[in-house]
Image (cartoon, rainbow, N blue to C red; front, side):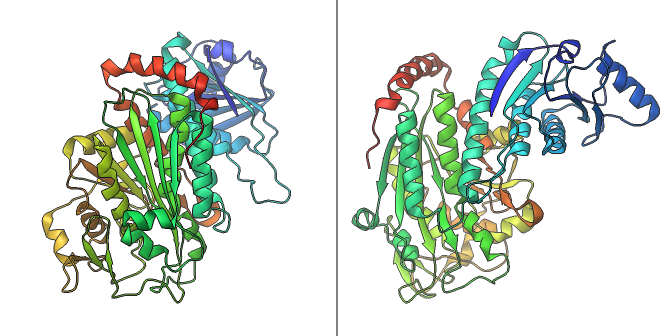
Length: 505
C-alpha cells in the first residue's frame, strides 16, 4: 500500500478524484463554505452527526465531492488517539467496497502526531492476512493520500517515520499470524537474515551447538522437549557512530507454547502461536529501522524455541544453570519465557548497552491487571521508564508502569537453587519481572509484558503488531542532537550499499 502526503484544504480535498474521501471531523470542527463543511453543519443541526468518537456519516456520490464515497469520521476532542480511532473506523467501514484509492483529510488544526495516527489507523484497518488461504482476497486499498493543511514539508519527517512504523507493525503482524508449523525458530532466523540482506544490517543466527558452547543452559532446557532446533538471533543496526552505545531489544520467541509438562488447558491453546510476539516486535522494529534510518545504534536479540512435552522435556523440579552462572529451579514448565529471556539478557552485557528493553508475552497475570489496552512496563531506571511511557503515549501504543519493590522477589526463594522460576499466583506479572531483573544488574533495563496487547482473540483473532509503534517512537527519541546529521549522512551511504551487503549466518 502506497502512502502520499499532500497539502490540501477541505475544499481542495473534495475535488480529488478517488474512490473514497474520509474527512476527520472533531466535535469542534468549524470548516468553511465548501460542500463537505455544509454537510457537517446541516448534519449537526439534524442531529445526525456530532463529531463524537467512533461516529460515522456516509454519503454516496455527494454533490460537489469528486470521490465516489464520502465518510465523515467523528474524532471527539481531536487528539491523535481519537484521530487514529476515527480513521480506523472509517477505513473499516469501507472494506469490501472496492476502494482502491483513498483520500484522508485531517483537521486544519490537527495536533502533532495526527499524520502518524492517520497512517497507523489506515494500515491497521485495511490489513488482510492471506498467507495460508487457498483463495486469498487480498487488501483492496492500494493508495492513500493524506491531506494536511499548510505546508506538507512541515509534516514530512513525521510522515516518513509513520510509514516506516506501519511497515514494521505489519511485518510483525504477518509473522505473528503465521501458524506454528510455519513460524518455527528456523523461520524466524531466516526472516532475520532476509531483513539483514535487504537493509544492510548485521545478522548472526546461532543453533544448538553454538548456544551450548556459550553456556545458555536455561534456553537449552526449554528447547529440550521439541524436535524443532532452537535459534538465537543477533541483529545489529548502526545508525550512529560505532562509539555510541546501542539500545538492545530482547524479544521472547516461543513459537508455540503448550506449557510443556505443566501443560495448558486445551481451549484457546491455538493462540499460543502468538507467544513469539516479542520476537515478532523486535523483527518488526528492525523492519521499520530499515526504512527510517534513525541516528541510533540498535541490537536485537531473539532467543527462540518451542515449549513442548516429550521424554526429554524439562520437568518440574529440574535445576538449570543459566549463562550468568545463576541456578534456577523449575517449578512450572509453563513459566518458560523468563528462562529463555534470562540467558539473552546476560548475553546483552557484551554490547555495553545504554539501555536494554525486553519484550515478552510473559504472564496471564498482566492481562488480568491491565487487560488489552496497555502493555505492562517494569523498569529499573526512572528515565528509561519515562521515555518508554512517553513513546507509548505519542505512538498511541500505551504502556503502564508497574512496581518492582524488593519484597516481591521473596517468593522466588528456594532450597534447591539460587532462585525458582515462579513465585505463586499473587502479583504474577511483578514476580516474573523480578526474576528477569536478577539478570540485568549491569545496565538500565525495562521489561514490557505484552501478554494482553500482542494479539486479539474472538472474532477479531490475530496479531496486533504491538508494541512496534512504541519501540520505534522510543528509538527515534534516542537520537542525539549531535548524531542526527551524522546518522542521516551515514544512512544515505548505507542505503546505496545495503543491497550489496551480505548477512553473516
